[in-house]
Length: 368
Image 1 (cartoon, rainbow, N blue to C red):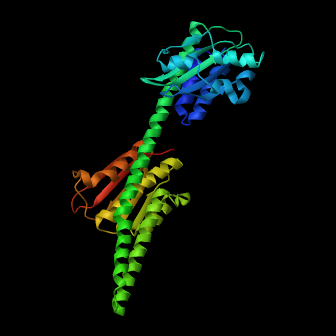
Image 2: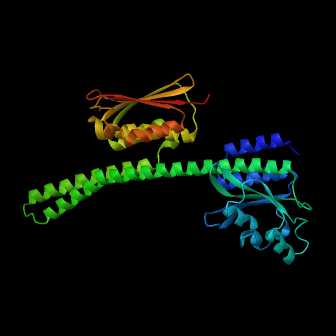
Image 3: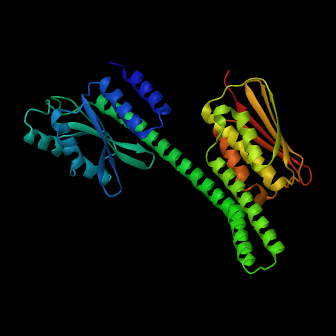
């Protein structure tokens, strides 16, 4: 059996690395039960209405497993009600458990000697998520040291639940912003071109001059091709097609799609994770989008240099540039780029001015 300090350290290290909710709960509960005198445990999530959900369990006695954990899933009990009323703030011995009593009555002898349990709320600051319950055969109560250990583990789990919750909200916010940007791009480009096609085709119905009809059809053809090109570029932004062949190939393919000639130069060799490479590619992609939409030129230079355990990337154009003090000009696109670079633990710098072109400098740490 591990010492209390060793156990808490191991659980903390596990929780710090875990991002999946189910895996986190199962792993923390298993570590606690396997390395203490506790014999079984289960975790309830409890919502604001006092309704509970069995979120995890480990080594339950046969009676509690019956009918798909019916006695843990169904109905309320004293500890759930006390939690909902805000009466549980510390680890507590529960001397009457209706769930264990009902299971014992229906399946005599299948509780494996478990008649009582201890409980501790899962808390992080002012947030409460549910309860961590543990039990052992032939134990009616647990001593102060065991309850203190239970509190420590419950606080660790509560903090991890808060972290996972905040991470999920952050991801959701990024997705919403990305959808808003794509919707805006669809409205500003494809939607306007489709509107133009509609107007032109309607006007063509009333034309009798063959030459004018031919001009109208040519206009419709060219506009539809442009709309298709814009749509493909937006779809590409949803999924980084081409990265399986390396970031350089993806940059070349995307720049060709949006009509920007790109000159790529790579100095040295680098190694970064797939997730980091996707984020870096997205930043470069956004920079090339800005060249295509705002610079007034159709050419850019992308240079990637490996030096001092860092990958330095610059995206340079010799176009119109812009005023960095203009918040409208730097609102969403660069904000999104800065958020991505923050995730990579890197740096982003923009050097530009009216009629001075633009240089986007990206620095990310790399592996040996």
